[in-house]
Image 1 (cartoon, rainbow, N blue to C red):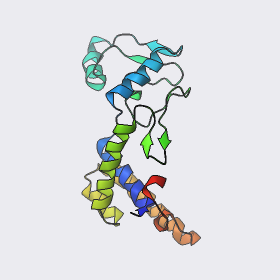
Image 2 (cartoon, rainbow, N blue to C red):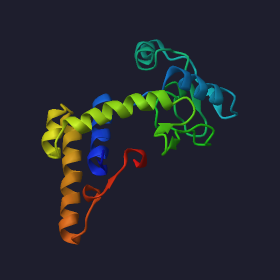
Image 3 (cartoon, rainbow, N blue to C red):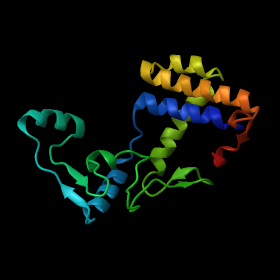
Length: 174
């Protein structure tokens, strides 16, 4: 199957915007958090105030939060996102282009997302603007995507150059 890399990228962006994050498996979250816990830059945060407690519990599932002194991120959130990385490179997403899977702990989860993105890819035509509106994204995201597409089209017209629309690759090269 030939893959239009622009269309595949668009499918991945729309999928991400619809779902707001691509989460790691539970095992991968535990692996990442344990690496952080053993790091000298790991820090426990003070308990939230009574006013903040309910919101913190809703946002993070716990009130016992930890952060990284290197990047300042809340680790209960950062370690769950498939595309996040430790600023000290103690853990990060890696990809094996031949197997098309992510690194330690991420393979099954990435395969799930890849399959869902490919379904979106196969379901939609090449009219990206209609595709965006069919996706029920919020208006701000739609405006940004539409502007980027229009700018890219304008740049193509001005340069007379080609873009990824004309390039294809095998699935393993994505």
